[in-house]
Image 1 (cartoon, rainbow, N blue to C red):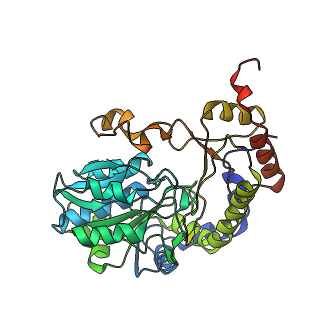
Image 2: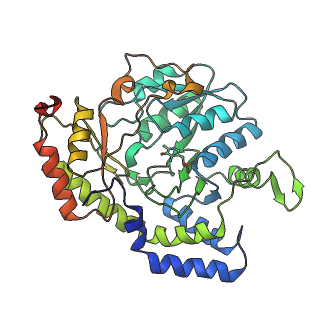
Amino acid sequence: MDIPFLDLKAVNHEYADELKAACARVIDSGWYIGGTELARFEAAFAEYCGVPFAIGTGNGLDALVLVLRAWKEQGKLKAGDEVIVPANTFIATVSAVTETGLMPVLVDIDPATHNLDCAAVEAAITPNTRVLLPVHLYGQLAPMPQLMALAARHELLVLEDCAQAHGAQLDGRKAGHWGHAAAFSFYPGKNLGALGDGGAVVTSDEALARLVRALGNYGSSVKYQHDYPGVNSRLDEIQAAMLSVKLSHLDADAERRRQVAERYLSAVSNPLIGLPTITERAAHVWHLFVVECAERDALKEHLAQRGIQTAIHYPLPIPAHAPYQTLKLSPAMEAAGLHERILSLPIYPTLSAEAQNRIVAALNEFTMEHKAPHG
Ligand SMILES: *Cc1c(COP(=O)(O)O)cnc(C)c1O
């Protein structure tokens, strides 16, 4: 039997009874947008992240966009201001910036963690830089103590992209608890996944929280009074109810992901395969387990032949995409060649011990001879 890269059906099946009961509760309530399910989830998620405010949004991209738009409304940002983003991230991090009329500046990553490199961030700061937008890639925090210190020194705003890092920690502080605001995605494949689209902004800034909520609700805080040019980006009652169920299992799920990661880290001993690096004092939540291999395509094919599905996050650098061609990415940057070497292995709470054994064995069997077509 093939091992899928991610078996969402199995992941959600574990909580099927609770999810169905929550769904029935919403159906029977007769209230589908902006009700008690949303309020309950927002309160629980804010508490989980250790911040006072959480605001549900339609998705993770909107969560990023709404914070940037709110800062513009507050006069903290203006069109053309520079936002530092990691050169290796999902496209949404960059499109949130361009969508808001701001200028993304791609900054290099640390080759060990693939997260933002602090020295490169410092070198990229110009008089036009206004925001740092670190991504906690793969489920591990970016170097937040150093980035917050840099931000304080240069009077920059910090927006954390936490789409891959629900519950991840550094020095005992969770993702979402570091910056001036943070954006989460609850896309089904994320560690805290809804059964549809969803997202949230978390912050300790009450004025920002109010503004984000208004902007995502047609610029309105009072029904039919529109103070800002807003959009419609809300987390609906059904998804909020699904997320309350999933949140109650999130830490246990993260522990099971960690066990899979530990198995890979201790059992994969093939010198052709580079294993991920864990930052000191970090609690990694393993959204992705990304290995590096000079013969990545051959490795991917080798695993596929053994029924093991893998993925690539991400197969092309940002400037390779037509709308972002003008963004600069020097070939000397670590991020420039990364997409050719990386491979994401299956990692999720329900991945069986037997599947893990097959994956480890296949990885350890891989040799360079697989390169030759008839070798
Ligand atoms: C998934 C993801 C997003 C966007 O989330 P959506 O809910 O799909 O809009 C943003 N940033 C990163 C790093 C992501 O992985």
